[in-house]
Length: 71
Image 1: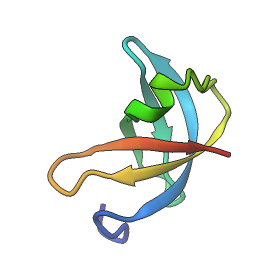
Image 2 (image 1 turned 60 degrees about the vertical axis):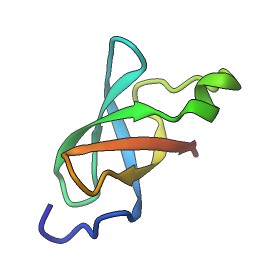
Image 3 (image 1 turned 120 degrees about the vertical axis):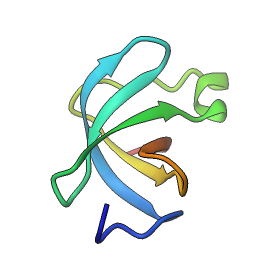
């Protein structure tokens, strides 16, 4: 994550759906990370499918991200 700033919103593409609302997403720089669905998206039952473009907020401490918006 050298060129991706922490706590930054980045556009990514969902490449794989994992159990319990987790997804493997590919960032614009080619890096692949695990991202989980934000609580508001779960509450409003926003469906995220493989191939969707999403906005991801990168976690400042680990290699995970939070999907905050589906584009």
